[in-house]
Amino acid sequence: MLKIWGRADGSNVIKVMWCLGEIGVEYERIDWGGKFGGNDDPEYRKKNPNGRLPTLEEDDGFVLWESGAVVRYLCSVHSLGNLCPDTPRGRADAEKWMDWSSLNLAKFNTVYLDQYFRLPEEKRSKDAIAAAAKSTAPLYDILDRQLAGRKYLCGDTLTMADIPAGSLTHRWMQWTPNRPSHPNVEAWYQRMAARPAYQKHVIAVTRKL
Ligand SMILES: N[C@@H](CCC(=O)N[C@@H](CS)C(=O)NCC(=O)O)C(=O)O
Image: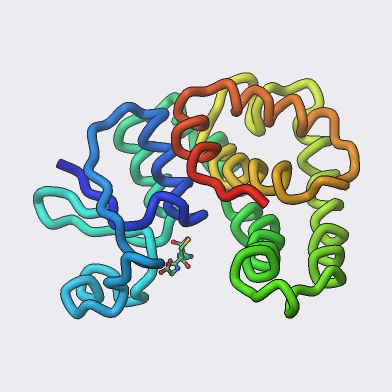
């Protein structure tokens, strides 16, 4: 059976788990990293030289790391024409949003995780949190414009384009109480939040403030 190495609440693991939930493939997820440890285990490092999460492993020994690559792989193998668009331009368009999200949108998550959950309360910086929210708002302006007249980022059905941005957006919604208004993003978030796979793999595992 397909294995995913990684703790369920890691933001990069979440992308892969939500994707698997949407596809409906059977998998075994192994708690790894974070409080479970194992990142420096020599056998694990042979699979993933970065000692990071997630790592996908298949029965024939195929191994893949980098969450975006894992999502693309799973969607192209199990959901071509659905989660993975089946034209070169359609696919490139979806991949554009995936890369954009991981390179830009993910930055607020790193700051929030440090500030809210890793630093002791006396060392937290309201300014750092405010600065992260401020620099993220224009990214949501872009998403809001893209979502005008569309249910999902690449049209009216969920695709792999939505997975990195969509999984981070739950954190943005939960952890940015005074965020600026983005009506199309809010409606898109509500659509994702109505999906059982999103509820199970994104919402249920995310820490509350
Ligand atoms: N670019 C990598 C980043 C991987 C990464 O940094 N993962 C985090 C968890 S989301 C990690 O391994 N942290 C160490 C740990 O949780 O032990 C990817 O997207 O797969």
